[in-house]
Image (cartoon, rainbow, N blue to C red; front, side):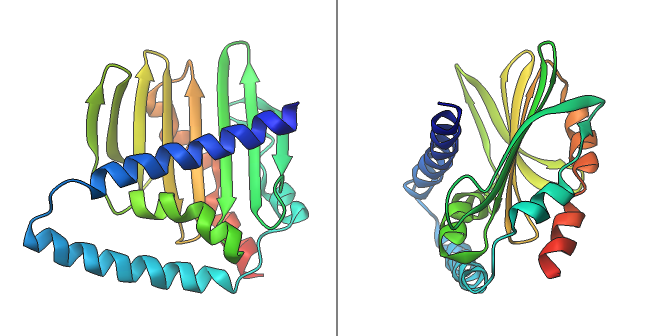
Length: 198
């Protein structure tokens, strides 16, 4: 049941990001924006093609990177490489109602490249959306461009595309926006980059 729930959550994240990207593409573009869009499309295809020939991180590689604590919260559960052909790692850190959920998708290989495509696309956008559910803005998180969604008083989500390869999702419950930068720093994403080069 836990496996089905995790697969469902991963699929929902893909769908939500893809739907938001499609809504933006349907908006009317000015000629200057169309030129930028063509450049972004070319860059997008180049990135996807470079990822196709790479090998996804193994379970052991993800496990060697995975932090034991974040903001002092202990790692309570993790799932690594749940889907065949896709390098991925989901980790939960919690104590009481204070929770951090991390999801990393490795863009290596055909399935991985397709999996990180929505993150790559959203990393090129500047977002400022508001609704009854909350608001989403493009912000800088520990030096990285991120899409940050403020859902309720004590909940927020952030997604980013790291090193032209890794999709990163961070979900917080009962933590502040300020803690997001510290979490991104404690994740030590540069270690994933180093592991991928081995």
